[in-house]
View 1 (cartoon, rainbow, N blue to C red):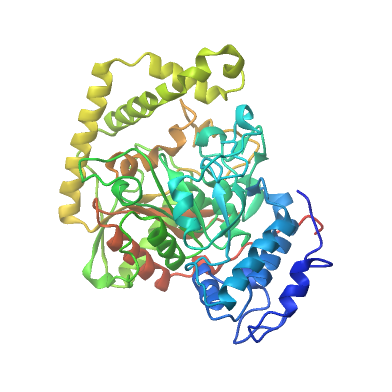
View 2: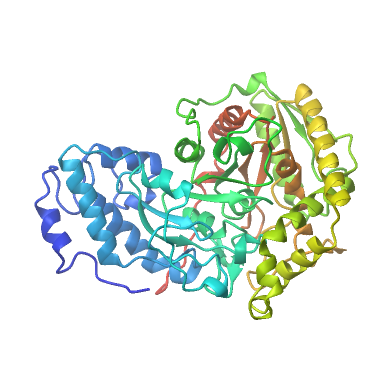
Length: 497
């Protein structure tokens, strides 16, 4: 990272002092905090729009924080040069001075998960094969965010090709949890979640196939929302359910909703209010009647969260699906492995195969053994699961589960080999808890449930019926009002601390 002294001797400094906004560097109108990075994305947006603070000041505050903490946490990679970012922020200020408003993210710093291309920026996908690749165009998600005025400062770290819920790769290394940089941030949107939890980013986006928005949300005590698969990714109907989708993350639910409004194909998420908890009923699925190995303490934290919901007037009942969960795992692995055929060219070339992580090679080899009948059977099981979900949602507004089966673990470990003495037979078996929502293509939000005695954060999945995205988010708004977990900020460790 090319570290520079902010504004000193630069054209941005002189221009800032002449800005016609009625403020000078370091003096803010209203009741803004001295540390601008502590503002939520929604509040920061308002402050910029009202010209209470300049985009240059915002960029300076975030760069200062990133240079202090990112060397320890490694959330943001491929950073753009400071001077270039300050020039872009100045242009955003000059536009505002002419009453040109670009959108709710006007002049706000943003980093895109390193699985999506941003024109002119490094685009590695966490793979040594693409360590020096430069993107030639924006992805659709990037275009939507750019159209709201964001300034792209870099990328957020991710595991190689997004595989695995441990955020490490041979290009940039591992990303730590915001609450303990020695522990994993989760994945695959680990850099995004850590960036939020450390306040190095005001908001962040990612993708979710096997909990990649939810698991990092839990491991960093932030909100992660997996939308119904037609909200961001396709114009299909309830039968057209992809296995993965892009989605938003936020320091709180309001910020998450705001970014979803930007990402969604049909932006209808701008007027949501906390749900009346007295009118709803939740089903608690726990560890699926001991089917899932779960680290001690996780179920208890989730049950405390549900107790708060129950005390606020909601109905909460234990429930189990009428379904063979081992069949669900079979469906999941079959359909997931089938998607690896698009990586075959890298596997067949020995030079590139040597650069692939072992877990990816294993998945590709698993795909080679699949027959059309196997895939048909996987889809049949999935269709039956969707029928069972619809049955459950006739009785319950939401279904709840832990977000992960383990607390954040050492970032030096590739993946947990066992949970409570039960061996994990694949590199992703320890995240089996998330496939219920993934196979359903349904909206799922991670909400925080607190911390264990070691200070490790955990979350709970709240799943809604396909298409009930607004309702799930309105529950999260209500849950946030009756809990204080998001207010428990980490004690960060800086490069010189």
